[in-house]
Image (cartoon, rainbow, N blue to C red):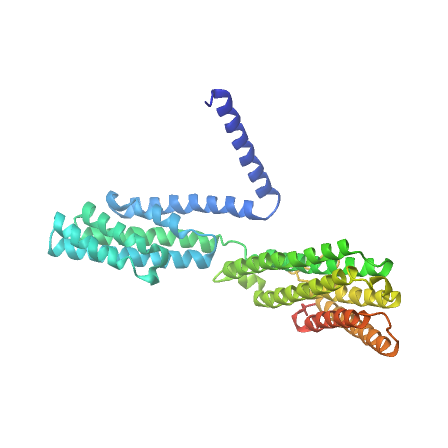
Length: 395
């Protein structure tokens, strides 16, 4: 049984969570700040809608204005507009049905039953989206509270328009961030993960012949790149929605297109799959009987080749943030040149290794199939990253 002491602890714990939430909102941009700002905008929109409706309309419909303002206020301008339009459509359909039955058939139990049949049928209209359920709600309210009278129905529509207007006005003039920074950081994290994996494989191959356990760990890390890519894609999609119809987008006209981020993510995800193939090849080799016979000069050269692919992957994923250059990066034109240099360096190492392996006598059983598979994976990575058009060109 919960006592006063436990209740007090729960209250203090909840108060502490709220304070930490507010502290994070004040210190840095993020979900916490967006949440606090959305609540502040909701208060402003509700008060403005209620004040205007109370001044202009009869008391019986004023409640619809602040309610609609809350509904219109969404996390993005695009979502706010679409939800508002759909809600207004649902209200108009419900009001028209209520007014039609109220003025022709009168207010009776049987006419309400027939009205509900039509309203529930209209609630299946797909263009209204999730707001289609508001059709019967509005119809019942207009029919029961307003008797289906035309004047009441018009006042109700006016209240909805006031609420929508206040909600959209607050959303537009206090527009949410476009999330260009979040999208760029998500892509940057993905490229860092890909680069880190390739760099670790390269560093280990240069120093020693990796064991089966290390190779399996690399394969597991490569498999997790797909999860990171999915999260980055979701962040970019959220940024795309936040930018639609957002007046702040005008201020960010010099930024690279969010659509380009999808191409970068898809490419890095495929590079991660090739890195997983490299790790699996090494894991298979480590479990074979001929692993000790692998040529050290091949592994050392292959380590240098992977180092070039890691550098290319890192440069490929560099994004500008808020008009600035990421930490450790260089301006767009030099970043593009650096990518080309890394790719060309990798191609030279690939050609040298392939030519050497063709010249030398590979007597150890199973040597050439392993070398060939590893070289093919590295070559495919370089082909994927040979896209300097996707690297920021702005200087």
